[in-house]
Length: 165
Image (cartoon, rainbow, N blue to C red):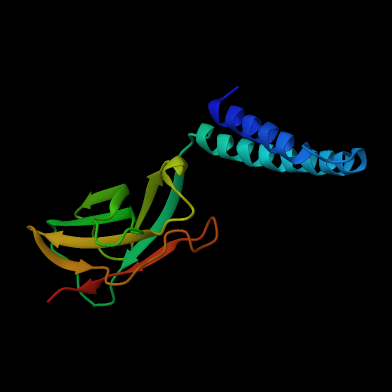
């Protein structure tokens, strides 16, 4: 039995013992029914957490990065698209996934960010960013927060880049 399930069972038994102390037989029956329902709910939650950890398959976010200026970037340009955890303030974003593409050509730039679902915590905020650099000089970059998961499962995340003067 995995450690998480064992801890859930142990907690549930302690809770049941505390609930049954000092009650009449009729109240014990009602408490037992409530405890069984509570145990089922707790175990369901434990199993869900376990399933997420065991599912090590990779997930994909489809990204389409573009800019509105009517111009082409030089051939030595590098496109850099990232998925990052941006939920912590005053700390550098934690990189989850990235794609770099040399000489990307003309926009729109379509890329797929591959990530491990186990690295994603639904309580946190994740952003997709894109930038274009030529010879180390930043040409275009995203200037707004683009939520990586505020879309349908098969929808493409659109990332608008703005020109850097």
